[in-house]
Length: 371
Image 1 (tube, rainbow, N blue to C red):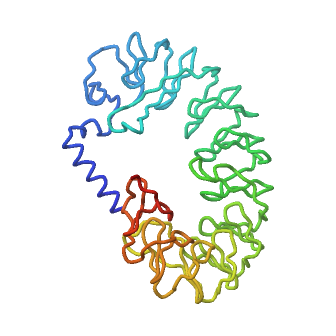
Image 2: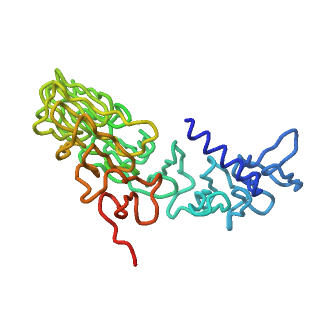
Image 3: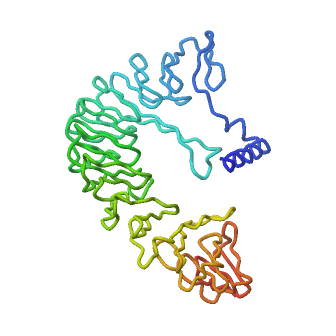
């Protein structure tokens, strides 16, 4: 949180210095206060101008999304459904405002589209960007086919269901029963027959996947683990070797049942479970913190670091570590690295992320320098 506040403060200083700050402030949209109509604080004097909500308005001849005219809209029948959807007697509209990644603070892009095939007379709004008419469903203005549009219900931002089927990001989830499908927590769901794991579109597990678990006894543990008393699950994978009765979640992606140790869903071979501990990251170190040790070895994820000294082992930045003899990148030795002069760059530099007196390195490999 402190880092976020510092970043925000730095941005504010930059915006004040460059004059961008007034543009960056959140806009108020259309407002009417004490009979005075404004858009983003600028007064509107047209007596025929009618504010529908923060995003939509009409005058005697034109409908507007923010300050942009909606070409061809029928003003007399035009209504706003929320701050993105609107309709008239002929069309349904989806309007959105976005910012370009490279010019985020200075460029806004507005999209005003007529939804092909949408039926205004039966079009109804749901929540989280979903809507339906008598023949189809819609998500953020894009049509998708469902078996029973009138029964469509929103389960979460990217999951919806009708009386028969479940839809993830508008795609059919094969085998899931829409009528009984429900969310258990932020990543697990169920219907009357099965348990499911779901990710978000930005995550590696971006889908709804069935887990072969017992419905009645299924219980999420600390994310991303769960159990049905017979097995432990890591996301969608069954950890068949783990004993649920003694299972314990450790730090850094590790877990144990007292006899075996795991990294995520993978069993670590040859580890001493009784002495196994996860190594906390030092302050001001930015790296994958998947390090641990037992009485015999140092581990990165499920791999032993070859020959690493437990007593002198130190975690560095950017995936590097060292002991009193060797430098490592993740679980492998950095061949030829000079221990005394080896250092990483705070945020990477060009094609290298580390160097010693002998040369530069990127992800543990020596970089060939241009002559």
